[in-house]
Amino acid sequence: MIHCVLHDPQDSVAVVVTEGTKAGQTLTALILDEDRTIQIPCKSDIPLGHKVAMIDLAVGDTVIKYGVDIGKVVAPIQAGEHAHVHNIKTKRW
Image 1 (cartoon, rainbow, N blue to C red):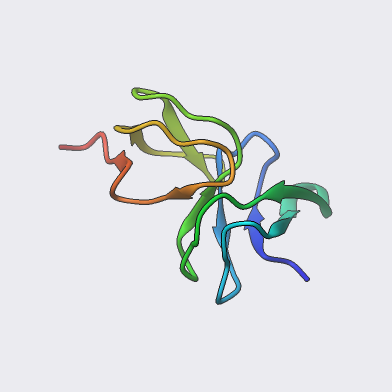
Image 2: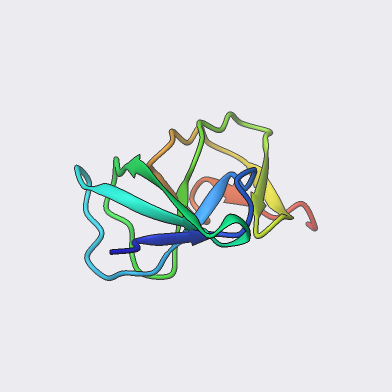
C-alpha cells in the first residue's frame, strides 16, 4: 500500500494519501519521478492530505514539496513527523 507520495527523491516532505496514518507505522512512499518506493518510519499521527517529513529539518531550513520551495521550518521536524502550519511557514509574509 502507498501511504504518501513525493515527486523527487530530493523533496523534504511527502503528501499522505491514506486515512488513519498513525505513529509507529512504517510508511511506503512512492517517488513519482522514479516510479519506485521507499520506507519511512512514521513518528506522529498525520491526517490525509497533510505532509510527512522525509528528512530531519532544522529551524530556517527550506521545505521542498514536488520540487518547489513551499516555505521555511519554524520548529524542528524529525523525519517521519507531521509537517504542517505548526512547524512550516510561507516565506511570502
